Every structure is written in C-alpha cells, then in structure tokens.
Length: 470
Image 1: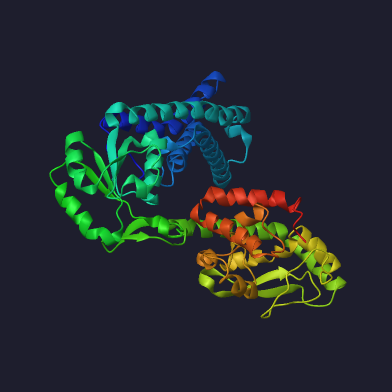
Image 2: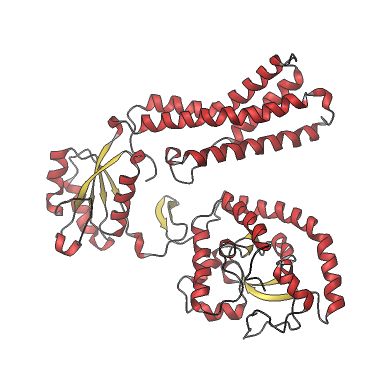
C-alpha cells in the first residue's frame, strides 16, 4: 500500500499534479523567450526549434519515478537533485541533437544567451517544483483525507506497517490500535498502539467507531478465521487489506503481482525484471564500450609489461559463479606467478610472495580487473553487482552463510556496494565474508540506476585510497 487510499479533494490534487508535470517545459520555454527579448534577439525558427525540443525532452525526462513511494514522501533535497540531474541530461541531449542536426556554428544561437538559460532554468524550476510539492503535501494531508485504521493480529509485519503509517502522515492514516485474541501478557509491549480487544469484538467496534480501513494480519493457517471476519464485516463500509507476515522470509525484491490473472507475491526475485533488466543491460553496454575504449591503450601497455616481467599467460581465466549460479570464466590480468583454479585456492595476503612486481601495482589500483570489461560486453558480468568469488570459495561459504547464493540472482559485477564500503581484499573469517554478502543483498533489495552510478563514482575514489587492495 503505497498511496493514500482515498482523496476527497481530488480536483485540487489533479490541478497541482498537472502543474508539476507542465512546469519544467513551461518555465524553460518562457525563460528562453524572455532572454531573447531582453538581449534584443528574435525568437526565430532556430530558437523555436530549441523550444520544441526542450518541451519534448522535459515531457520525457522530467517525469518522476518514486520507486513505489508517493512523491509527497520524497525529501526536498532529493527532489532538487533529481531535477538538476534531469535538466543536465536534457542539456546533454540538446547538444547531441544540435551536432546531429549540423548546428556546429555559433551564428544560429547566442552562446551567452544559452549559458544564461542553462543556469536560470534550474534556479527557477527547483523553487517552483518545491513550492508545488509543499502544496501537494498540504492538500493530501488535510484532515478531510485522514482515515482511521485498525489492525487485526499483532505480529512483526502489522507492527512495522503501523509504525510506518504513524511516522508518515502523508499516508493519511490514523492508527487506532490492534485486535488480537492474545492478551497483553502474551503480546508484550505494543508501545504507542492500544490493544483494542479480541477478534470477537472487531465488528462491533468498527461499526460503532466508523473505522475506515482494516488491515488483517493473521497467519495463513487462520484462513477460516479470516473468512469469518469478512462475513462479520460485510455490512460495514470499511476497506479491508490483508497483510502477510513476510518477515518470516529473507526478502529480496519482494512484490505483489499476478500470473495469468492469479495473484502472486514474489518473496525472492531478481531486481532486473522487465524494463529494469533492459535498462541495466543497455547501461552496461554503453558504459562498457566507453570504458573499454578509454582503457585500451593502458591495457596494451600492461599486457607488454606482464609479458616482459614474468613467465605465463597475460590474461588469467578463473572459474566463477555467474547468474543463477552457473559457471563462467572471468578474465583478469595475471598478477601472480601461479594461476590457481582448483578445488582449493589460497587467498591472497599482504606481502604475498606469489604476487609479481607488476602484479602488485595492478592489484593496488585494481588494474587487473580491466579485462572484465570484455566479460561485461559478453553479458556474463555487469559493471556493478556482487563481486564473483572463485568456485572453491563459493562451495566453502554457501553452507556457512545464510542467503549466500541469493547474490547470484543477478549478474556479478566488476565493482559492488560491498567493495565501496570497504569489504574487499582477504576474507580470513566467516564474519568478513558475511559482511560482503550483507552488502550484496542490500544492493539487490534497493537497486536503482542512481545507486549504480553512485557505486561507480565511489569506486573511482576508492581505487586511489583503498588500503585493503593488495
């Protein structure tokens, strides 16, 4: 349940929502028109073409996606950063379109005017959108929209939802309390939430207090009791929702949906389903090609140095587990005198004598990972994801760490959330590996394209000051 169930003043909400949608395009075109007038230039065909392109791009790129959360719950700073990032993306798209259309000369436009326009639009747009954001919050959170709610069954899932509804008034729910057949002595403390009575008294309480929403959080084994409650509540107007106790599971990208009309709840799934998977793959291809072109001269020099300084292959292929736990060959520049890939692999330690002189430099700055850009273009790896471990290490830890193999629900990455949080290098204890897995699963639960970009930027910073790289 991610949106207010019912909004009575829908006209006001609709007007503000429409203003939020059209504001970027209207402000961008209005500012462009005013600047041409102020600087004594005609709003001619070239500027009109720019205005049309801007409207189209604003319509496409300024539409907010809240990842299952209402936009009114977003922090103003988050909204501001998103608006700025999207405006920069629009500017880049306009520049590329200009080059593609052959506008490479400056006589068509005033560069000083365009520079002022590029700066003034976000300076005007961000305050305007924040003002509309506050208006939307006030309208949505008005008292006439607030609905009373009770919970049937006290468990971790229902308690967590009650806390969230109380902490977020944007959801327009006032939690009255819980109904449960167990007494306070068995339930323990319910903190700020009242225990209103047992299940037998639910129907009469709902009618007497005109309760708007009922959240049923009884275990599946009490299905008959749930059906009886539904019968008892049939003459009330309350909205009824079922809250499964999913806290019993280790959830990864859980979501509700349907298969051929049959409702299902995914408890463990890859985050890259549908269009999200397409977006992830396209990002890997585009950035992978760019990265490989930039790194190619460096890779040629490193190949020569490896060949001249030690015997053995330049590229070391090691078996790793990839998507869905299937074996893949991962490419690395050889940084050691040995090429271990058997049933037992000794992890690299600081001052390890097996590391070659050039290999120490490669490992310090993660240059040995550059050939994995080829793995990315092959579709065997991603730029960002859980780091693939040697097969021998996988077999060692899969039985020791709960949820270890869940990290293989996505493509392994050249870098990951664990690595930018300091979890790299030797894992001499199970606890150290467990910390890596924790970050990997957190990445899968919370993936967004922006998280990938953040990890890539942090990786660049980490490369130059990571003391665990050896």
